[in-house]
Image 1 (cartoon, rainbow, N blue to C red):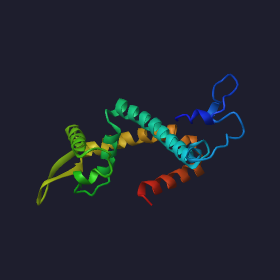
Image 2: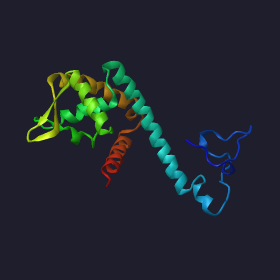
Image 3: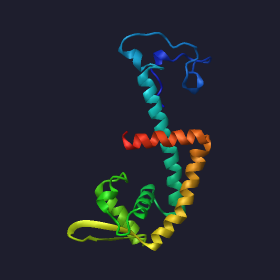
Image 4: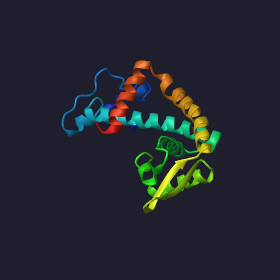
Length: 185
């Protein structure tokens, strides 16, 4: 989290800002003008604080997931997402282009990731009938087996790093809010 402007931070005894990112005084310094909305307690500051918390939580969860998937299975988080999306596709498979909305990679990087998974035997790539440019991705039995072994590790990390720190009610609210944000509603 970035510190607030020094004019709004009251030093704690000893000359350093109070712990927890809060000013030591009970009232923030009064101010007016355009800078007032960026001081602690203003709407813009609260927005920045929420953003900082969200990115810090994402970084923590993603880092732990990345380590667990790489060490246990030689996979990246994006590999996991690809396996999961292809596993939920119809039996005939999913077009490579359809994966791009679910996996945050450029089209060339996504194509390379799918090629690596295909080289491991986790999926197959084939041409789309009547469309010479299209690529159809299907999951192999080995890919389904790999995904079934990875899912408990993924769930365990998410539980340990995120969900176990929340009450069941907070987990429900988190899921609802993130679903709404992700859908754009």
